[in-house]
Image 1 (cartoon, rainbow, N blue to C red):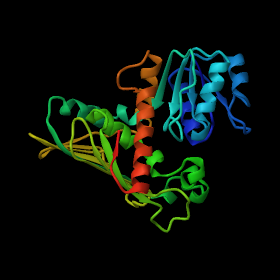
Image 2 (image 1 turned 90 degrees about the vertical axis):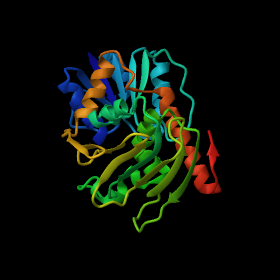
Image 3 (image 1 turned 180 degrees about the vertical axis):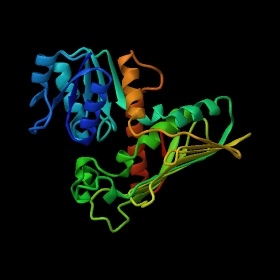
Length: 303
C-alpha cells in the first residue's frame, strides 16, 4: 500500500516510521526541507507522484480542514486519517469522494480501554472520574515549551484540544453526552497563552455523574479513569498499565507505539468499530466548545 503523510513534525515522523514498519511505501509532504525521502513540498505533487491509497493528515490542526478540501479538489478517493483533534473548532467536512475519513484517537486501541469497554457491557454505571496531567515543559525535553503549539492559544493549543483523548474515550464508553459544565483557563505561572487547566462535569446517556480534569501541570504524569457501577469499582491506570476490578489487579505493559500501530492496521484492513469516525471527531469538538462556553458563561450547556 502507498501512503502519504502531510506534515513532518514529531507526530508526522511517527506516522511515517510506523507505516513503513507496517510495510507501506510511505512518502511525506512538508513545506520545510526534511531529512526523509521521498518527500514533497506540496500535497498535489505527492498525490501525482505517489498515487497513495491512504493519506494521513498530521500538519497543524488549523490546517486540517483546508487539507481535506485540497484533497477533495484534487480528486483523491482513498482513505484519510486526520490527527486529533479533527479541527481547531467545529467546521464543516468539505464535500468529498473519500472512501473513509477517520480521526486518530488511538487510545481507543489501548488494551486496557478495550478491556474496560468490555467490562462495562451490561453494567449500570453510576459515577465516573477521569484525569490526565503532564507537565508541559517536560513534553519535548529538547525544545523550549514556550515555542510548542500547545503553548499558543492562537494556534489551537490548550488542554481541551491537546488532551481531548479523554473526551473521546469517555463519550465512546458512555454513549455520548447530554450536557456539560466546566471551570478552567490559564491558571498557572507557565509562560503560555493557552489554557492549562480544565475541570469538566458531564452528564452522559450511560452515566449521570462524570468528572474530568485535564492539565499541563502534573510533574508525575498521570492518566487514569475510575468508574463505579452498581456491582463493581473499576480503575484503569494508563500511565502505570494497571487494571483494578474491585481488589483484583492486572498488569498490562504497553509500549508507546502499540496503539498507533493497531489503529493503522485497522485502517489498512478496511476499518472497524473501534476507529473514531468523522462524526465522532466533530462531536468531541462540540463538547470542547460547550465546555469553553460554560467557562465563559458559568452555566450548564445542553447538547
